[in-house]
Length: 205
Image 1 (cartoon, rainbow, N blue to C red):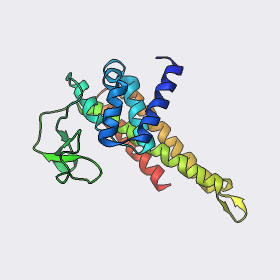
Image 2 (image 1 turned 90 degrees about the vertical axis):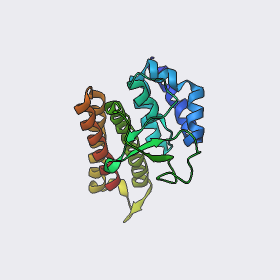
Image 3 (image 1 turned 30 degrees about the vertical axis):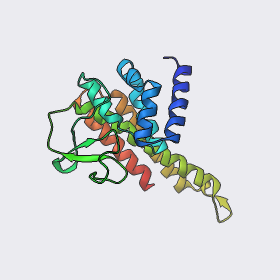
């Protein structure tokens, strides 16, 4: 896939994610050939799709697909995922579990512990999602700093504001570099941690 094709794909995915979320987005991405793209070019599909999920604020159960492909299984299903506090969840693909989910916004349902899953691929995907969220926060903060005046000067002209934006960009760029370089379980764990820290830096600044 050359740069022009990648840009076209990114534009298409961004428009799709801006228009839909959840089950509707999952169906729309299936129609666009998400399964084939993930199976054939996961090195492009995962960073692009998950970063855009973060940037647009949309969500879809694509993490299931990433882990299913990493486990050598067909996409489109679900599998138990480790969750916080030693619990396990299933990220449902439809809204049939409404009322029994852990969160009103996400169809995560508690389940008994499942078999081991290839967490490295999932950690990298979540890392890209966090980086995308951080990039969205930086874009909003930058626009605010450019548009707002304080004491008769643009907020962006103050060194403290510029330093915080720069620190956030460095953290996000570093997180991206670790995600690209992650090739094993430890690398994926460290990359996700770096992405989480970068997203926290963005939120704090």
